[in-house]
Length: 170
Image 1 (cartoon, rainbow, N blue to C red):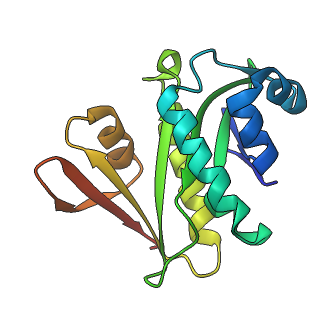
Image 2: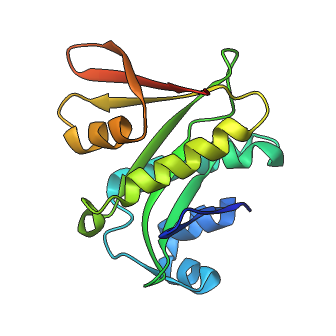
């Protein structure tokens, strides 16, 4: 699978089996990737989302897996998995993809997610058929909003509870 190098991070697209191990056998995943995993990396919410990813990957061509999987954020110095980010599928009819992300609480506030989102957005916009990346945040999720502002996204729409963001290829 694909690995991106962003400076402080390696961002690795996980295989379907690696996603399964993230939920059921994190020790095996850590050994396979020759790293440690932050203890709070896989929350209950993340477990459910990973299950959805596995299901989508099971019904998509292998070439689409980078668009469906989670990418593991590996901090290079300590070789520790600190978060996940990914897309919700390949580019749609409007040539856009939606990104989502989460990071272990002990690694929040250090700019890792901003770095990861920049890396993944750069990767996505270099792929054929992708001209824009979108995201959704809850209005109460200020840290996620800061990541999107720092990475160049702009607000396209708001509801009472959510904000919708977009970043287009220059």
